[in-house]
Length: 97
Image 1 (cartoon, rainbow, N blue to C red):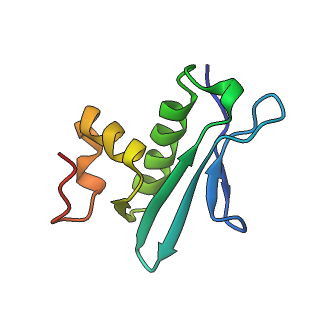
Image 2 (cartoon, one colour):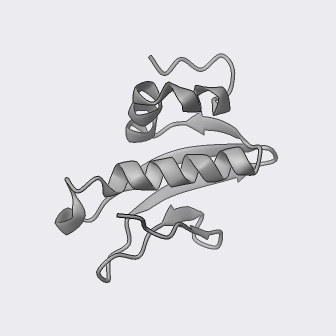
């Protein structure tokens, strides 16, 4: 299923709106870098691939905006490890496994 990515700049998070709930990835932006700090999926939505879909769309947005990624969130780092096509976004010198 395809969800619409919302970049909520005021709340500093990428989010989906699903069944009245808000899965999100919190971030900090500094110049040309974006730090993805925390991914949160509401309990009722866990295990449905929503977290992976959210990370994928957020990383696609990072790529589109030509930002350098610093994946501080373990879930995001694991996603990148499993999808090496996104490693080019990561700040050089950061080892994500």
